[in-house]
Image 1 (cartoon, rainbow, N blue to C red):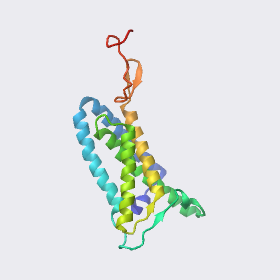
Image 2: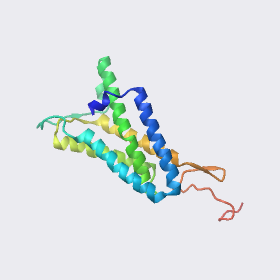
Image 3: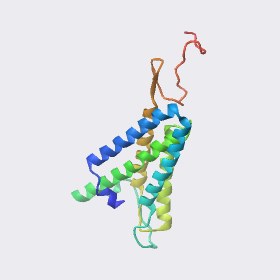
Image 4: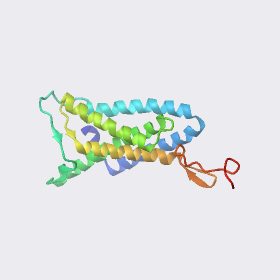
Length: 192
């Protein structure tokens, strides 16, 4: 993860989020024409993305140690940090947030009729699983409540991007497919 963190700048974060937003828009458009193909692609891409996240977060970075470390409570690391330490902490938190954005976008499109809460919830459960694995295996990793918060925020952001990509204009109203808020059209059960 630290090799990745060193390349994070405001430009790279903006570029990454722009690419993920374009992916969400493309999947949203493809979902209308080829829903099964979009689900299949999303499932495959999700699996590959999850493998990369697991490699970056669970792969051993040090020797096995009998000591397990948990950083709790959330956001405690900000107290008493020097400027360079504060910058690195913020960059690490941005990386943890950004890492889960594409996971949630792909999760949103991988399952038919599942929505924003499903994708964000899956991101949260994945984050909890990663932290549990880091604690259990004791591989030079630290269990951090901030990671869970940032990953959950990234999942919510990704799921929101995916939901926004699916919004379409129909019969003069904005509609999010699968929410039950489809507009009533004249002649189909309406009195208009």
